Image 1: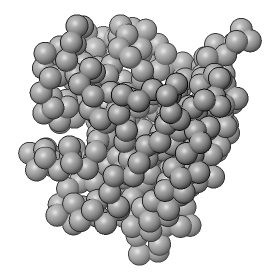
Image 2: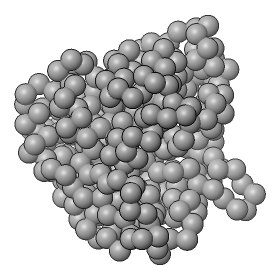
Image 3: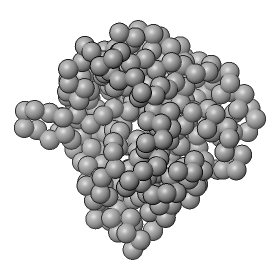
Image 4: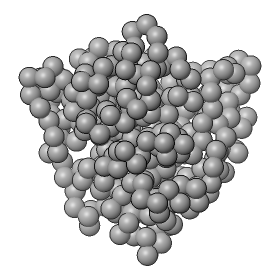
Length: 312
């Protein structure tokens, strides 16, 4: 099982000396002491509205927002990522979860064909720090940038300022970066994904969430991902989980992303929360077994199927 010590955490120099120990605390909490990130993405209630939480193929438990927090509490995750208000409503009942506050969001009602995407910042960092002072276990913040949108300069400026402020206060930062807009003809082009990873590094993020690339040169997505992992440098690269697929396919993709593509974790939402509570909890454990403990796909499937258990 990969483990890191506190002195192995590479603390960026924009973390103020008085916040250095808190940054290390938060990094170790978020990565469960491994340096790898298992992020449970719960921000889709704005991003995709209710379509990801109720409907055909989705367990009825997902219609109730508290389902997300039950999974986060009973499963094995690094952080639960959601908007400030969502976390504020439920965190008092689930104080043991590590929270990452998503600082911007937009709906998918207006399509890219109508207008280049812009995801506005919804609140300033002071609102997040106030929640932390009130006892909420906030370890970091997140922000989405649509690279290639005509609004990318605004999003990059907002993200850059937030990263500086977050680091100064000892918080880690995860950037969601997706090439998207009228200027982008292939959102999952490997070169663009690698470029997005490099942008995250230059903005100072600790982790970057990207979509898995779709190469057209005969290489596998995991092989193409290796270039993005190299481009991200000390900014750890994790892949979005995407829409729900069967567990074996998902876990195999995750294993390859880490062991072939050089990813240092995953960021999964729908593949987890669209299932029943029991199944979702088992999937978080299977995902974490691969991400945080270097287990094989076969062992992770035993955990998902309930034949074995996994804890940290």
